[in-house]
Length: 627
Image (cartoon, rainbow, N blue to C red):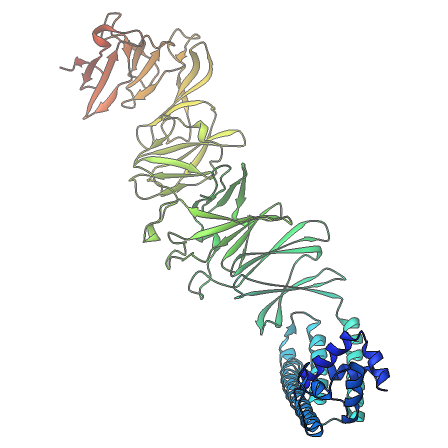
């Protein structure tokens, strides 16, 4: 007979007769628990109760035994009951064996867990602690004690034969140990705060501990098993409040906090290298060049790095940092400071590969820049826009043509051959507006540039193609042109004031390379009324012979003057005595000859506004028209 089928049939009969388990039990002088066990197939009534059940439910005994209506047949009640009881007992035995198996497995697992954590604790107390290792979270030691205590108790109860007294003793001991451990935990743990964070791929782990009493922060390294760490470095400033951590790459994590004085502070934890992992290098050197965020269309973030300064343009604001304003962390990150407060973090991304000879980031490597703030600050990826060849030994921050210059980040670079770059000493910040095409000179004999310091004008010059440089102060402000004929003789043409197309100024001469200057002319005209024109230009062919143009304001005509005594006296050059060809340009030297173009000026339309060209073989003493 199927005990479960029997139980369901009893339940069906009981409900059909509107009886509760309690009411049926009272009729049979039993408890409702016995009825519940029948209906769940966990028990079977005594044979003497079968007839009573049949009478209560008005069915045949055989129907009760078969577990369904209408199935009446002659059966051996005693035999069926015995078989059913045996089946029930067998099921009970199977469940008992299954429970014992589960209990044994639970005990073995608990014993294994207990052993593992016991070994970890022993390893810490007897080995690691002697080498200055600590748990990354102070409470872990006590949590492991809880685990050891609980799993030891469970393994005892599950693996040893049932013994009530012993089990009670084991449970009491477990509770006592649990309580003692809890007391120690509450007493010793909560004066420190642990901050643990992982990189995206869990390859690196940042561990910080903060003493909540004084705010001191310590970073831990040499992480073992993700749970042990050795104190590496104490932050120079105690922290209060929240601590912000931000992984910039898989091996760079930025830590930002506020110190007890309310100042923003920053620390960068690094776990990698972009070089060979052996040699030390300066991150600022790896960054040499110009960097741009190509992911933005407006307010583009830019970074410019040379061997003296770092300039950051971000959100429309430009900040200049000296190299002394930078602090390097490891070999893959720097923090830029403004008045000792961190402003930006720059990190070398994992795609950066350094040139073995120069330590400069090779082509294709990108960097990350992020604002230092307690607020959410999204990092930006920057790409280098300065040209990089395969060989970076000849890497230049700028590219220049022959005899050309550029001012970048306050540094003046020049090139004599279009290949080699020379840096002119001094700070040229803010002087770009001083330069025109005529008031500097780059030549093999003399290289001269203007600079300004403390509202004073200086000449910076070299006589040996940039090998050595000298600087001399000059008493002038608005220089129109500078011309040196050799390393010693030179001229300065300057304006002091202008009005209505007329300029008041002077021509100065030096014969000692620029150290001293003497005024040789105040312009064209009677003494005391000498003037220039605002568009006048000056050019000397030799030390004695020079030319000066005097253009009309509207550009209708221009007079040309020549000097043969180093500028002391000027006389007008007239080659065309007419009103058509009346605009004299400044002569130029070409193929050893002076070439002078005379055009019709702004009002000329004769022959389509053509011009005439004159040549001179004797530095302007005589002229002939070009055929």
